[in-house]
Image: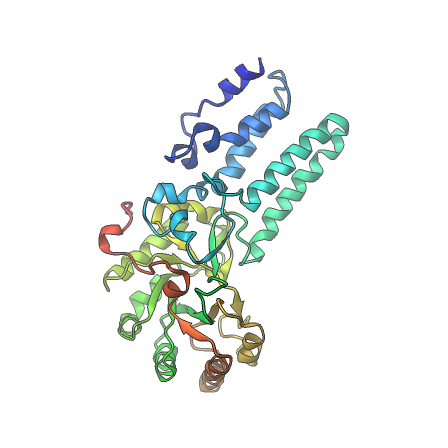
Length: 372
């Protein structure tokens, strides 16, 4: 009887989530959670729990598991987990042949299993592990380096591959005031960098984007509008943000392979958008908490205190508030940071070099999806 129930529940629904249709995994690996949870809650007569668990596992877990096999879905794209598992360190590698479960999967499965056990002995306590799982899901986005929901590149290799290297990254540009000054400063020190740009600003200031590329720096996708509450949008809106920026950059012959979420907040909705656009999520391991250049005083001291080999450094390419005085303070802090990097014996390199992944795709590798 139990085997018959498992066979019945293993049939995929007509509108199965994306991860159920991805190639390369057996059915039991693509859709295991609902089977296990339903079997844990007893016989088919438990008509109350079956729809609850079914809805929970499909709606709560499908965004997490979309990213589980992004590599299989994207083929040889940079979001493929085989490519991302090179010299860089990934957090949150999730269920795929030969790979461990993600923190979200581990936490969720443990919560469901514990809730099932508690339901048998003390039903009123069964809600506690589920509430703990929900709490973990709510807190996880506040930690950019913890890829709770999907793979995120947050650090270079810790070993001979990094050899004292770091990667400087600048968000929110291009900017007509700060970008030329920043490029001149980087050129004086001979430091390469990766600029995560917003598509709307690329359209507004194309000359600055051209200057960044002419200087030999790399470009990453940082959404189109950089809306402060974009993390609360659904996968369709997030995909549109990524595609609009990709289209804006295509005029310059650039197809970024990296995406950094605005404010560095990772939410499950990004997983499907990243898979569609074949982008690798990138965050950071060292930042000065400058609040988008609103808090530049002491920036270099805060960053040099915690800067280590292999770090992905977060800075911002936008004119600080406060007029010329704020701009001068910001430039002085960035100059001091560059001098401190040299004094520590660290060598800034491009993000692609630090992680061993291509930062840009050729046009033939561009995603097949397009907006209407």
